Image (cartoon, rainbow, N blue to C red; front, side, top):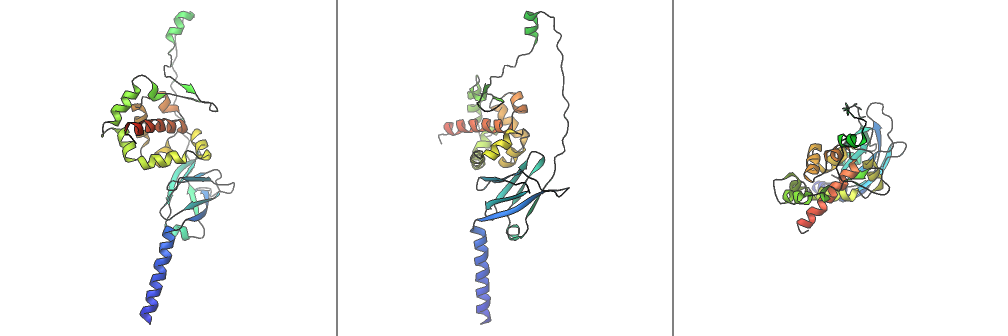
Amino acid sequence: MKNLVYFLFLMLSCGTWAQTDTTTIKIKAKIINSSSKKEIAGVTVINKTKTITTVSDDHGNFEIVANLNDVLFFSHLAYEHTKVEVSSTWMQAKIKTITLLEKVNEIEPILISHLLLTGYLQIDTKLIPINENKRFNIAGLNLGYEPGMKAPKATQNLINALTNPVDLVYSLFNTKKKDMDKLLEIKKDENFKKLLSQQSDREAIAMLLQMDKAEIAKILEKCNYSKVFIDTASDLQVLDALATAYSDYQVLKGK
């Protein structure tokens, strides 16, 4: 009889664990400042596994659908990005709290160069450096986009990169196909697009693609984007640039 009771208890325990592992639930949690403990509003919460997003309300609260082992990403302009894996212990906790570390804003030095102008228009116009990067504007956006791979020899440069298995561009699109697909799916969310359009630190993209920011810059360089674009473009522009290269990659690979 004791063995039967133990067996039934064991089966019920396993059944409960299996349900927790496979059942989709709505997680409710609060996001606070790690120092002041104040609630943080406007935090973009991303379930990368399910490619869904939400935003914390005025009291720092949010709700999002998740499964066990899903990875949640938290992004805010004023705070360091962080990620949390949904564990069984965390799912069962009555009070769920996420703490974000406030960013330390550093003022970067600016190099100011001067031009020795003569006062003669025909001469001075030749002295002033001209940005030869080809750009075009998109309706609704203040900043312009660079054609990048539409520039001379750029397509050939990309083809060379994609046909070399040891190349960084080939490596990104070949080994991180799932990450790219999920990131492009998440990009359809208006809140996520707004967040990316307001920042240019590459942290969100790097975290979601699980790669270094320096690698992102190198990929853009190989895709023939200028240093000005790489240094100053918003994260939304950079993601669009990567998406363009990824689209060409799929065509060249016959996907």
